[in-house]
Length: 281
Image 1 (cartoon, rainbow, N blue to C red):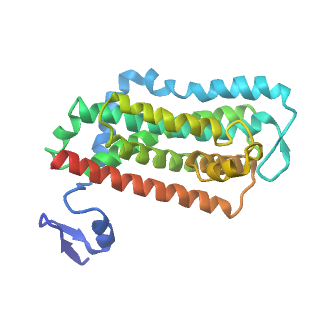
Image 2 (spheres, one colour):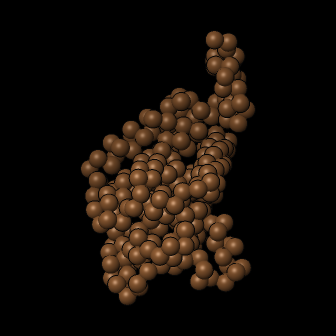
Image 3 (spheres, rainbow, N blue to C red):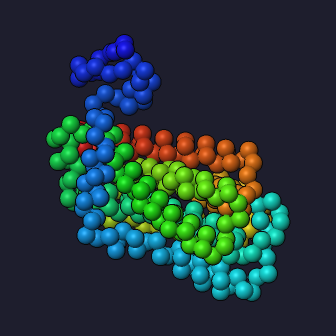
């Protein structure tokens, strides 16, 4: 295989030339799995904290889907056909579960390791680079979001809220959603100066949770607000999950997937470059 040399004088395959134009040599040592392993070991004795976040969407589902849902006869689904309120809310809470699990791990935990524990400074004395740190932390947040999503899907299946074999793709889709939110969350964390700045995280996440058609169809909003909502990431995730779990699958699914692929790539690159600037300069 033809090889070229990076700036450190190490050989790299010619086929990754485009990747090395996006990721400058020295930022990536291909050791991100070590950070994922370290996170798994660190959380081994705090498993109850790890899985605790999975209960919030379940409580919402039981209280709203089964409680409030008894007063709502039906809601229009993605294809306009009436569905039960529980079947309407459950995929939205699945998307919100993936978002919350990823965002909070990629923001609060990363900020503590970066600002106070100085963990990343120690890591950069090893062959790891800023891109390894970004990918490793995002991957761990992705695993946490995926854990929440898998558990929630199991509950939906047990409650009879899955109406199509397409739901088998809901978990991979939830992982992509978690990856995208984790990447953007970590990129945003690199701009945080103190714990007070994390009020901005709540300011972003809470309106997304409340207004991205999680509990109400898009038609209840004014026309201008409908346009704003359709561009938000959680709305894109909810539409993707509703389509898969209810079997309403069309070409629009590819648009949702592309949205999160771009979001994940942009967040990862920004997070890595910011970490490189903050830790190496």
